[in-house]
Length: 255
Image (cartoon, rainbow, N blue to C red; front, side, top):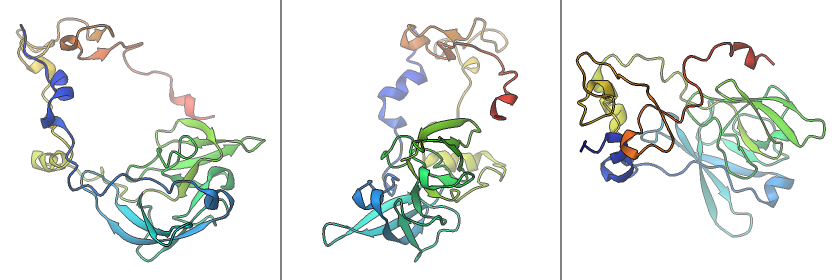
């Protein structure tokens, strides 16, 4: 009997769960309502603050509830240029300005956007990491679909009713600074979850990992695994359709 491998323990054990106690909350756009679909609503940026384990700063935006006498707070990813005291506008009739939220169909081609919805009303799924952004590439003739360029460079066609924030996510260039020492990585992952340091499978003993053991560190067998493999075998390239380097893909994004 081998030991229960690390990958199997991660699903079950509580010591690998994310550290969420000090986090500010889920980052989402306003829930789409009649006011946003047919006009606009004004909000005020109250705070711009750091959230543990997130590279990008978050901002708290306060709106008046359109139906009841109360305020509604929303947590957004802050875009570059956002500041406290700034008025932001959400809706199909809002102006094209940094920090405002508009449907993609109302944006001209070439607009830089972030926190873009993937499906209408899902409140923002794409380009939320620090320094990332999407770009509106074009609209269909009937203005029902919009093509955007994702941070990876690939293009995606989504409904034009999807909303997004105008601007690029703040906190860019975070990865430019070298780590320099292991202590910096220690503190980086301490606030995220227990996933560092990572020991290579071939550096372990046979009891701890399917790639372990052997004189000289080597795997000794193909690393591709069937989807139907048992849990203790599932390491490496699970149910890989293809392996190796991607070749000849450079022209894919030039369309």
